[in-house]
Image 1 (cartoon, rainbow, N blue to C red):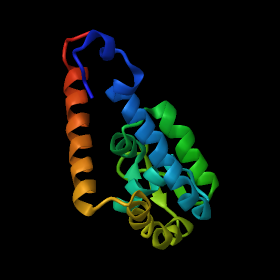
Image 2: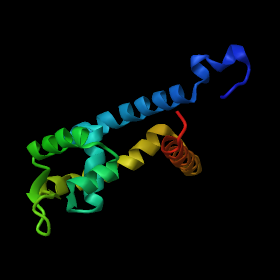
Image 3: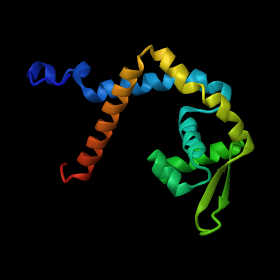
Image 4: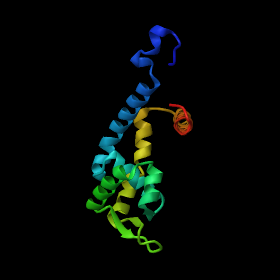
Length: 154
């Protein structure tokens, strides 16, 4: 809720940013027990989703897909490699680039991972129409944030 009443404008519970943080924390907490049998964390799950979607990917492409900086992406990729879920190899067209390829062990997780979105929907007890509305609102928010960050405003 966004209020113009001075006594309400700075109330924590009225802050959109606080609602988004709580929703994000809660969503990740819902995923955690579903990801434990796969042996991966939520950030690793997101990386694997991007790699299952398109395999191989360059490090740069994966970073763009996940919207992560190299400093955040590098340890994530190293952990996935240590788990045996991906391999990193020089790109055949440009040896300065690294290709990330899902290993057989990484592909084996795909069957288990396919059940997760349905389980999350069940746990949330939200109708498909509500989930679609939430998805659309979040993506509208993300686009608005990007425009604001790209503007000259402080």
